[in-house]
Image (cartoon, rainbow, N blue to C red):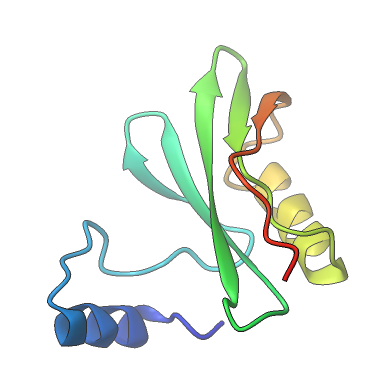
Length: 102
C-alpha cells in the first residue's frame, strides 16, 4: 500500500495537514478512531489508490460506510476485516456515499 505511516506523515507535513491518526490501517485491519467506529482502507486500481471505509457498531453488528470496488484484493481484505477487526459480527446496514468509475 502506498500510504504507509511514513508516507502519510511526510505527506501531511508537506501539505500542512494534521491527521488524527499517525498511521493508515493495513489491508483487512481497522483502527478505532472513536468509540465504536473503525477506519478501514482498501486498495483501488487507479491513480487514487485507496478508499477509506468506516464500520460503526450497531448493536450486535456493524453499519459499513463505503466498501471499495469489488476486486480480488478488496474481497480478500474484506474477508480478513470481517473475521478480524469486525469480530465476525454481521453487517447490518451499508451506506454508499459515492462511486468512482474512473
